[in-house]
Each structure stands twice: as structure tokens, then as C-alpha cells.
Image (tube, rainbow, N blue to C red; front, side, top):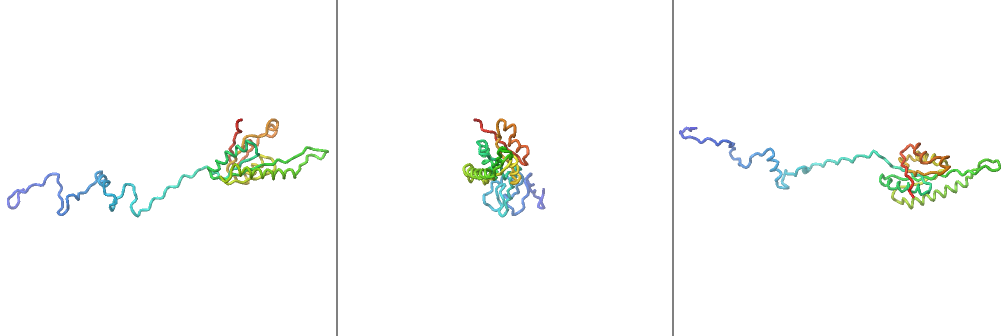
Length: 219
């Protein structure tokens, strides 16, 4: 290319971009992957530079998502007690389970009516004084059992009822609105088992809540 004076002017080199006057060549724009690599090497603490994933100053941290709620809710556990080895074994299962769910324990003992056989034509005789004595003795034993086996590990209470064992246990469960019954699978033996059946079996079939049965310990 010729100028007005007739001299040839050098053509600009190919592939070289024209830079505006007064702008340093180092102030070139970086884009794409190269820019992200350069940003990662920025001086820590520099204004406007933050590590990847870190919130900028002044930004409120996002609230943590709440933990999923368990669909299994157990707040009250009922344990029938007759002071046998089997029922005490069921209590040993109930205590740690109550601790895990932060549930309360309720122990129940049922006094069966004391009926003496007919004598001199007066029919069967019930002695209320004997039943009351059994109720008082049972209440003392239940409180002692709570002190020895439960202590302060979980909240615990006891009740004594009179009547048919399975019926009274079911009534206690409904009145206290318990979420679980833990009962030992033992009952009468021999002829009594045939005549009266198993208390645990009746509880399992008629309870309004889940029932956990604990088998007897093997001797």
C-alpha cells in the first residue's frame, strides 16, 4: 500500500489483533476454561475473589435441610409384669427400646379375684381383704422393680389392676394410649394352659397397638 508520499506502508501482521491506544497488552480478555484456571490462581483474600463454592461476604448461608422424620412413633410402652423370670426378661428388652425412642414405660400387674370354693351351700366366696393386701404388696414390688431395673434411664410408672389378666392389660393399654406392648410369651402350664389359654396370645389378637412378644429364656 502506497502513502501520499509514494512510500509503501507495511501491512499489519496476520493473526494479530489491533489494540487500542493507551491499553496495555496484558489487559487482554480471558474467557472459557483458561479464565477459570487463572481465577483459581488468584491471590487469596483479594477483593472479589472467593474459593469455589464458598459464599461471598454478606451472603446468608442456606438453611440446612431438616432430617427426615421417622414414620415409627413410640412414646409410651406397656409391660405386663407377674414377677416371673419371663416377665422380667421382657422388661430387659423394654428398657433399652424405650431409651432409643425416648419413650416412657408403664408396668402393670393384675390381681386375679380370689375365689374360694363353695362351702355349706353359700356358693363361691370372694374375700376383698385378701385382694387389697395383694394389691398393696404388688405395688411395692413394682416400685422396687422400677428402682432396680430402670432407675433414671427412662420415665417409668406402675399400676395394679384387678380382674382377668388379658382383659385388664388391654384396658390399661387403651386407657394409657400406649404405642407398644411388650409381653413375655408364657402362661399357665398343663391343664391350666388348656382351660385358660395364653394371656400373651389373647393380647396379641385383641390389642389396638403393636405387640412385641419375648420368648422364654432357654435353660
